[in-house]
Length: 493
Image (cartoon, rainbow, N blue to C red):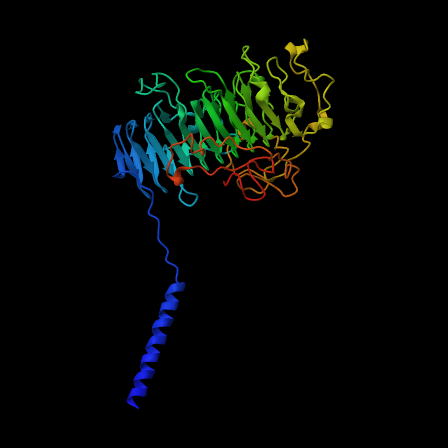
């Protein structure tokens, strides 16, 4: 009897052990990944002028009270959820590497913390903090190998250098850019970020590999200056960006410059441009949205242009500036809309030195454009061999792209220059503007997708970025015109 009881107890123990083992095999072990860190943590608080390296840690605030320098060979990493307050007149100088790894849930801020945004419709540009250049931007020297911003707010830049700064281009009395990049073998990556304010060019890429994607640009340039301005030695993609109220050209490719054998080659696709070009003090033909000039080249597809001062500009049209590389510049399937005849008659900038072809746009159609015979004829002696004059009154307020929340035609109670930010609080529903497309929009499905982005930054043969967290997410061409896609891809703001 004892023996039998012992056997029963033993059997129960074996079943219990086996059951326990079986249960453990179905459990999932989740190993948390620690935040990416470089070197030692930088203590939060006030940071005086000097050289820095290491990591600004998550959830902390830092105040730059003097010029902040990252030496060649050094790296400063900003983890997510960090606020960097930059004092007036302070410069960030990058001779090594600067990385800001904000996230959608916890973005980073590099800003003038004492400034307030004034986004009411009708507020004059004069006196607006967005155009006062409170600090002097992120300035990458020729030795900078990587400047990367992910999910980062960059605000109130564009101040004038009080003294000559210790980097190439930092001349006393010069107006700064929000970002300056100038290494043809380096990488400028700005993705899913917000850029607010500036005085001159927002991003000036003297040379470099670039990926500028899925960002929102507001109040860029005061009475001059371009948005993203790429020069000789620059190659890459500008895509899925939203520009509202830019001063001059929002995206630009110009092969002007020297120092490398790399032709400026920029793809501009699936961007959205709203009310751009109206603060530019130069003549009306100076620009507003897309510009290829001076030997630059690239692919230009699926861009949505609404109430901008001009259409796509192939050639600057000013001061006898050379033409772009028209043989290798291809542009189709773009969509343009305007409320007024003045703007409609600048869909093709009618000025000597611009050669925008009629097939630049999928909307309006060729039939709607009603262009005169021989409209695009570079051999013509009329108007310097450029576009002939045309008139298309039927296109005024025609082909509404049907935004989710933005009134078109725009109310006549303000000028187009007054709309330069998203958070205006004035729209069809009383909330912030929303430039997503309605499902019934004629821009849905009108894009061209049979091309490949430049992707030079993600090419391992040409790039020394080893950490996958630093590689940008490349968004291919979208089937819907503009920066927002019906499938959820593209701009995430």
